Image (cartoon, rainbow, N blue to C red; front, side):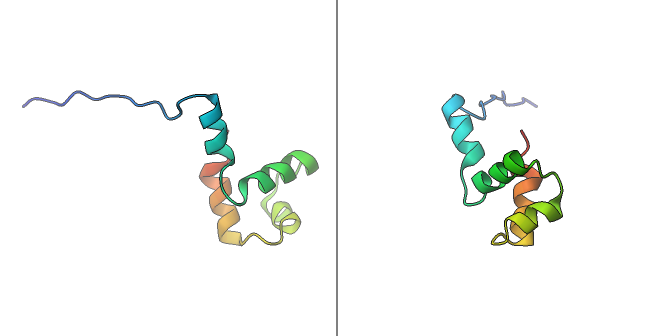
Length: 68
């Protein structure tokens, strides 16, 4: 049985692409701003500062999207 060769595709084409992937979306910039400006590291504090974002959305954004 022959195995197909695998190719590795880079996740990002360049630094600009990486930056755009990181900050795209409605809430990412606001979440990053709050973390940077207030030093907030707790979920409840972020939710308090960003009242418009739902619990589910904030959870999803913090789970996989803001890992740097």
